[in-house]
Length: 396
Ligand SMILES: Cc1cc2nc3c(=O)[nH]c(=O)nc-3n(C[C@H](O)[C@H](O)[C@H](O)COP(=O)(O)O)c2cc1C
Image (tube, rainbow, N blue to C red):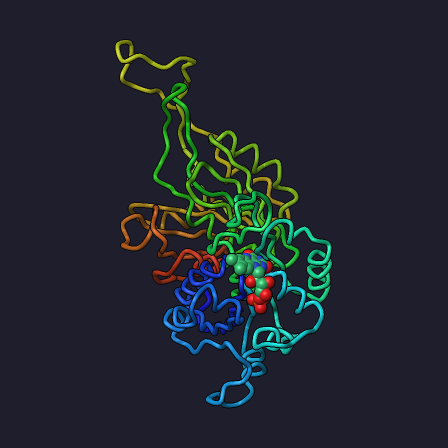
């Protein structure tokens, strides 16, 4: 997701400096070229060698290094797609807010006034809540810095309160959201459904399917990164809610119908990536069915066809469906596109390696209303989501 992106990672002298190693590693794994600058205090907590090994790049700890060519603090600042300072100490924040440039990191940050700068403050809660720190954070926000709010919880000093560095995965996701994608969906309201529904048989048993929600969650994350206001309506999953997305949890196909149709008219783009049950038990027992009295058959009835309903009621919305088949994929997908009045259908075959349930990749063929077919080779669900959303931005 960050392939080819140049990221300057500033590490300051807080106890959470050790977590910056994981952040650096994750950014590198996502394809970024990461250049680490450490303050003198940061070197008290972790060593430059760790970052050098993780990033395969020189680690900067001083403005003055005889071996450097050019003017590193200017070159690093101007070569960066984004600067991330994590963790950011109270001291660093104070210096950045007041234009102080007395080491390599603060000099580089000052030289990056035309760049996106993200900081992730982490410190004791009394330090964080100190009006001086809060004023400095406000100043930085007013100058365009993106400030990631610290988490609350047990702090390293033993206190409990706000000030923890958020999970590395969340910080990295935030960076990706800021830089990885063209903001082609700014101002758009996008509704995405994900995951499987559960149709109760009795209070302890239900019918479901293998959908894990990964494709829908990837679409939601990328749509948000592209600037959309995103609502994700999701069946139960083990996935973490994407940052900045409104998440509505549902259980059954009936819940899904209610939540989607309630929002339909205020939405520009609807992508139905959920695996909604086609059938549900006709009679749901109030009590657990005992083994001894079980009939050993469950009578089913059809659930409401949400996509067909949305297709019938379509006004200004762009409507997209997913189609997973085990045979006659394109034929079935085209039929569904027409019969449900869709603008696009994303077809995948359960039998193709690297596609389908639970995996991080997919293989999709996109079929548009005018018959245009785009076969996308195996790729991450995020990258495929980006292609789908770019096409939809053009249609809408
Ligand atoms: C064990 C220890 C932990 C510290 N943790 C933090 C911290 O989490 N956040 C913070 O703002 N300062 C923390 N400090 C204080 C900073 O190290 C100190 O303010 C230093 O001047 C920061 O320098 P820098 O901003 O140039 O990295 C800690 C100090 C010590 C000794």
